[in-house]
Length: 128
Image 1 (cartoon, rainbow, N blue to C red):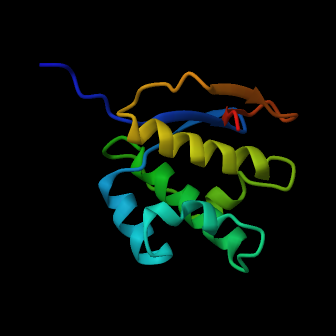
Image 2 (spheres, rainbow, N blue to C red):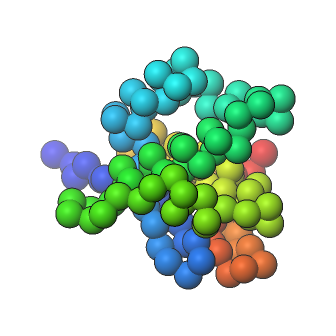
């Protein structure tokens, strides 16, 4: 029997490592909010009038799902302070990469690379 990995993907924001996890809980909440996890790309489409709110909400959700037991969950306001115009594209890329990582059972996808932002944040970036 092989070991089941936890599916959490590390991402560094403002010098701190957070773990993003698309757990079953997160997928269920996404289904309620977006109509299905398969609509993730539409949530971040420029034509979505709630794109910024959806981004902050989802990042908060998957950071909190990736926390160890006993850690204090982050609020949307706390997570919102980690996101700014300069790292917005990398945050979106990291969310998509975490989704792929989680659905692959915690296995790295060969096409994924890491990019360091101007602020020193490390995020996984998918090749298109």
